[in-house]
Image 1 (tube, rainbow, N blue to C red):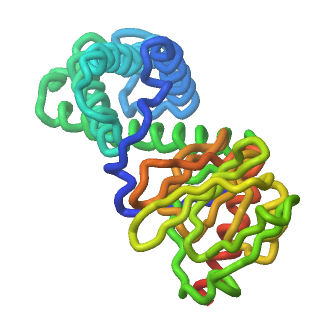
Image 2: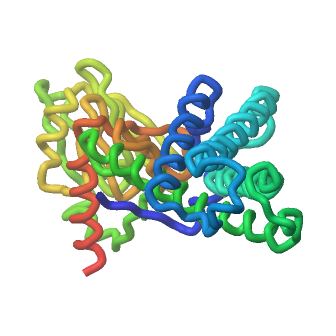
Length: 300
């Protein structure tokens, strides 16, 4: 599984995660409860002697597992009601901030429950408040990282690698293609045409026609040619930077600036235009492989 990350990924706007959406929130909280409960029962992390416990260890574990699950559910239910009023965009940095707030609340709740669970004259001391908060932040962060890595793994097993960030390819213009002009033959001789490959950004199929999008002198231009995308693609087979990423699209990988999406498909973006090009799920592995080949070629 290849992961590409740049310094801007924390602030890049992303879709609001399904795990926090209202219809999935109860299931997410239940998963958190079960995982924490199993961990506490197996590893017994509490360094408290038996006489200090007001109840059985199993009940103590259930309380400590239930508390963060309830806090997470209540916190994101409130947040979801605010999001319906369009409060801000979602980013990884925003997610980490909210997860940190949940852990801080969970640690505070653990401190407030001490008098219910333990016989200890220092239950309300600052020492135990800091201890509960620090334990919640450390253990919660480890659980969060583990759950996210597990999620990434299962996404990658759906058929393709999971890509977080695409690093744009860079090369000298004369390395990109063997020649700037290519004569394209069509089924009808009078429809044959010459094409500047250096300027071609992407191609879209339109029935028996193709729509060529090119960039020249800082301006994007489109033109329609009577030839199928399959016939056109065959005539570009000698140029590895042109890739058939979808049954209806062919892209010049040298112009790609951003890649978003997951193992279900990518969306390619280009500087200076709002147009995007999809990469189908079936082509994800080939796309990543071609990118790796070009990156190695142009960095040599």
